[in-house]
Image (cartoon, rainbow, N blue to C red; front, top):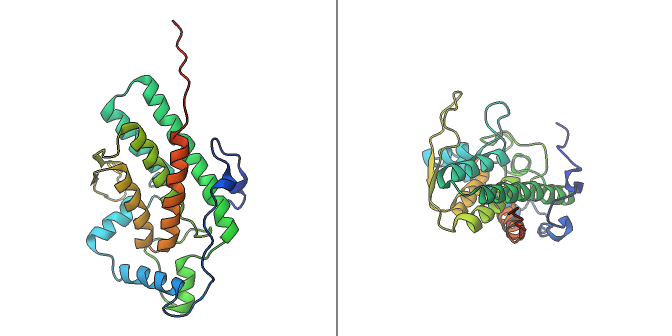
Length: 242
């Protein structure tokens, strides 16, 4: 397939300056055993042979890449936001702030992510593994048609988690029921103790399905957190008509 959204990184963001959030340079490429890329690839293979029952649940829970069946990855975080709003019943002002900042975070983080993706244009695990380790290996989920580094899922999760934690607390426990009512396949709800826990599990799931290296996800979490922090600092001026 053609590369997806190669110019998306040039879209104007709402809050951030995209150039301030470029992913860190990767180590020099090497396919040699016991080197950086080879070790990261081995981790993916080991996790996928086969996925444990718990890891399969995690992988499918966050794998929002089924057009027509599930929502998109940012849609999952909006579904989480909806559940928080329904549970907390905040004031209309806080509700609007929640959706505004969540929307800003998701939009800006994807612009920054795609900007870095096409700077580095790094191959996916499937490509590396088939060339250097196992020509017959396949990921648990189909590989997306855009560069691997950094992970978009990880950046979206980290940014949204920071925004929601700033508004509703660092230790916000909830059960994510985003997939309830899905008829095509069953994905049980999952319980979490914080938004950060959700974001980290979301990132980990991308390694489990075999579409990201760990360094993709770790850098995605780092950048997403920084962008979430900048969005959270946005001061909204309240103007009330007396």
